[in-house]
Image 1 (cartoon, rainbow, N blue to C red):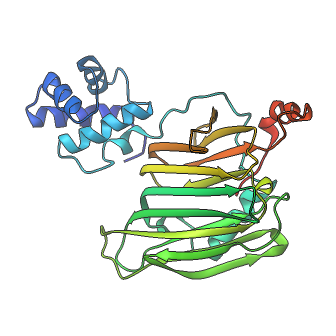
Image 2: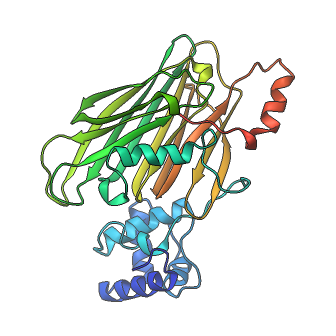
Length: 317
C-alpha cells in the first residue's frame, strides 16, 4: 500500500473505530488519560478525510490510537506519510555537506553492503549525544539504538562520515560500546570519506528487537565541527539528538535541520541551562535530521555576515 494514501488512512481509522465499539467521546477520553489530548471534532475530521494528522503532537496521538485500537505499531502512521515540516524555507533540496558529498556517501554505503534500504535493520529508537569540547582535540558522538530485525540472521547498520573541507582529514575512531562489533570498513582519504558497518551481537529472528551502542571519535577541534546529522532509511518511533558544548567557546547560532523526500526545513534553537541543545522527533523518517551551528566571536562584526548567509553554509559531521 503506498505511503501517504490519505483516503486509506481515513477509511482504515473509521473501520477500526467502528470495530472497537467505542464512541469518539470515549476514545478522546481514553487518549487524554494516556497523556494524548485530541478533540472529538479532530477525530471526526480524521475519520471522514476532512483533515489528516500533520504535526508532531498529532502523530503522537496517532501512535496512541494504534495502541488503543489494537493496531500494529506504525500501521496508521504509514498511511499518513511524512510529517509536514514547519519553519523557514530552505532554497531547493540539497545534501548537507560539502559539494559532491551525497554521491560519495552513497558509494560508501554500497561498499559496506547497504545498496538498498532492505539491507538495514529497522531503527525504532535512536539517541545520539555529541560532546563538543573546545578544550579538546577529539569530539565524541555516542549513539544508542534499538532496532527490529526485518529478517532472520545478523542485523547490521552503517556509520559513514564524509568530512568537510574544514575538518582534518583523519579517519574517525569507531568504537563498539555494547551489543555490537565492527565489521567491514571503508577508508577513502582521497575522498575524505570513512565508515564502518556495525554488527548487532547474536542471531536474531525476524521481528526480534535488540539494542546496541557505539561511539565515534572525530579527530578535530571543536571549531572544525559545524553539525551533527543522522539519516534514517525508515520511520523511527523516536529520535533524540543532543549536543553538549563544553569548554570556554560556544557557537553563536544553532539550527535544527530536517529533510524528507518532500521537504526541508530549518528552525533556530537555543542552548539550555546545561549548555545542551536537545532535538526530539517522533515518527520521523525516512530522511535526515540534525543540528548545525556557526562559530564566531560575538564582538566580531564579521560574524553577522556569517549568520546572514547561513542558508549557503553546507557542513556535516
